[in-house]
Image (cartoon, rainbow, N blue to C red; front, side):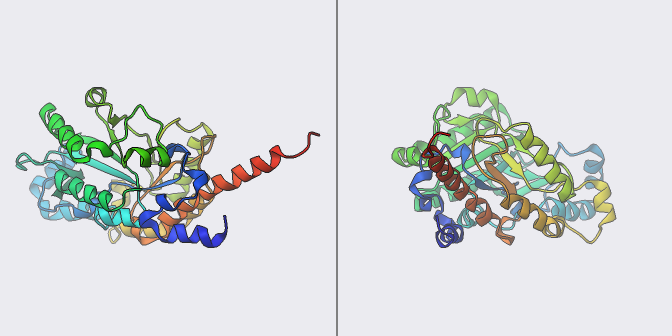
Length: 328
């Protein structure tokens, strides 16, 4: 595959899956390189909402006493994305990390959360995503629903019923081995991971939790070392995420009062993207699948990850040429 065609696929990312070459259409999706966004809905955090109940008790007490201090700080360090879901998909993102929560005094609606709650509710966001999928019938999106802060059993039932109704025949069964060709032939566009065992067991359309590897560090060198260590131990047999996202702690925030998560991420992005460009997808040891990142619209992250799939073509070409060599 020539460099020009590779650049075309990387540059026109709104329909990059439908632009992949024929040789990749029967590869299981967990053996392709797929760009993902970490905490995908954190672009619309609500500073008027309280801190999550799962946050440390000291932070929650401080928030009750001095919300004008805590919430702007949490907002600065919890915002990991800058654009709505449909725009992330236009950039090439095909894995969405949705952390769902019940907001106090939020009525019957469910929201998303990262430190604090979002302004946009779950139904609104998923309906927007469904419209985007209608306009891009050959693109497949992996949605990871998790955390479920303060959800009741009834909340889970209603949420899953809504998801099944909204996406309907677009949902790929967890019993399948999805490829692009098989998804296209069945009109399937959504792989829905739902991190609740009870609901997962009741609905074959729901996939189990997708492992997310992340280093829990603000240091990009430690992130890379961590991911390399995980790779050496072998990858999961199905979907999994290699997280490039950095993680701050209270000490880091105190020592960097003028920073926020965006500035920290931008300063560290170059070595993380260099590491990404060196990866290869595939089933073997070290093979990457989904790669997650913060602020996905501020670099060539999506194009770099998509471009990794052409390494599968090179590997197949080497194998083919090697099989034609005369025996030694």
